[in-house]
Length: 311
Image (cartoon, one colour):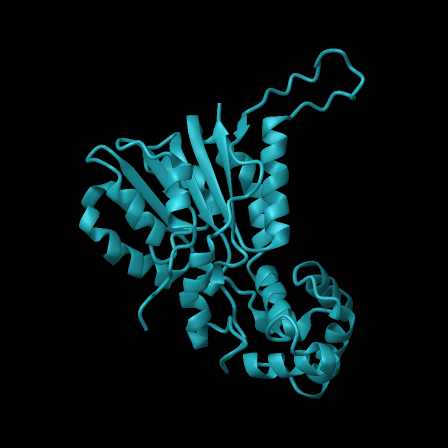
């Protein structure tokens, strides 16, 4: 199956990065190289693009797609959390721009055997990096009910989280839940009939929650943002596309803290904490996809782009 991933907010990202032809740009979520290809097209022979992804399929496909750009494009299999180290090992201290396009790619969703989708029947997996041990199968079959409840409530923001967790534990005690189809059925049964047709597939939020847990997505994001800002050159840009309210909140708070890091009590006449602003939030409100883009690519509907510019 071909790795197809329609880049979300493509022109908005290119504008947000304010690309310099001889600049250095790092993409922490390479995917199908949709954004990466456009960035490389904007670079001259001195420019560099470093694309990271922990997904083996993404790395293989993107390496082929970016091969036409020769030495100016470098693809590395790694989690974006390791970006400072990866850049250092490539002889790069600072970048002119960094992009993170969070969430799951269309290819991952549409490749049934990856176990991300409730629309196909496949072994429960959901690992973005198949080298890691924890998969959705362990989360669904081994986590205690209380932990499942908190994951589905917090990461899936599902109001039926308590009942869903209870149903999963009851069903797995009879026989392990090993496939996406079975998990989707169990979740659907836990939701009252009159609510099943509201807001898409009834298992959508649970699948999202389990995927976030399997890949530690929110922890990785929270722990990486300060490092990302610190490896930007003066006037460098950090562009982040989120697809989930919790991700967006993490990004918004990190950008706000980097812009105004002062921890002095509000009544102090002058700042004495010594924390210096690292830059400015470019867009107070997130950039959203146009009506046209949402029509052409329904998966872009929940996308939000936030941009930070280093001092």
